Length: 309
Image (cartoon, rainbow, N blue to C red; front, side, top):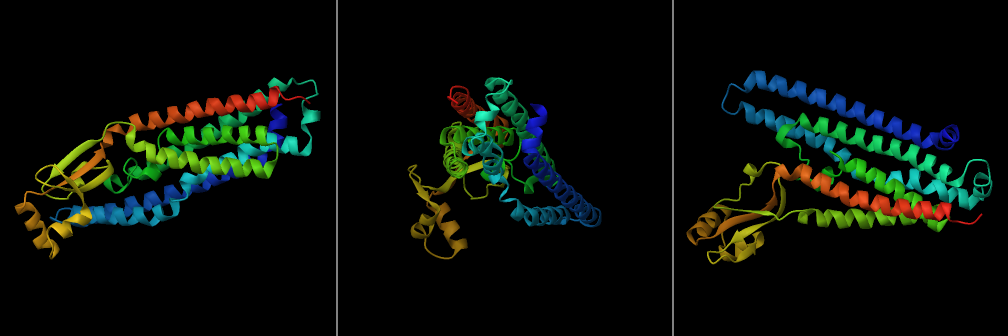
């Protein structure tokens, strides 16, 4: 069974391994070049008053350069579900080869266990490697890199990518077991990814009760890598208004508007999740996806073991 699993799925394994290797090389080269650029700036200018600020500017600029190309990375779990999970059973049913595979000396439960066990382990390792590489790359850029405040990057660092990759893999397998045709199974898998990803993107802000910060200025730099949820101005009576309302309360140029708001007792507010909740939120999301993995795994096994040949 191990040899058969490798023969049938080696294309997915090799393509994914090549992609991760290429991604790792790009992150490594880019990170080293950023360190070199920041080091030169630090030695030349950090003794001056504005030197370190210029180093931060260099790191921010370098981070943004590659970040633009990493925007599709959160979509990787969808491709895992489509190209790893969905074909496992859908292709067998569609081509009728399950009638041969499930009537041999290898019991059906063992066939399913080996397939899901081996490929699921490889998928989890792929998600783990992805998360470690991107997190290490972000560590080069300090405050310029957001892992918690950037909700898209939150899903590709820490333990979240392991949970996401494994969830989508099992979801694809379950879709193939229930739909039994490859293209419809792929469509269902991708549609479910959009629904689940969008749902957790919204729900993530409520994994814990948010903190509230009120200050006389709108500077949120002290919050670090916090997940910002809502911001605006707060009237003296506690009424909250959006940022766009500041121009209505105090018309005029920005500098005069700030003085007018302060004189009127208005203060800026922001609701946020503190950066120290990063791992709490990571494990919360991993738990939600883990429950979904067990559910769809049970559906996949039931659709295979209990199906009549």
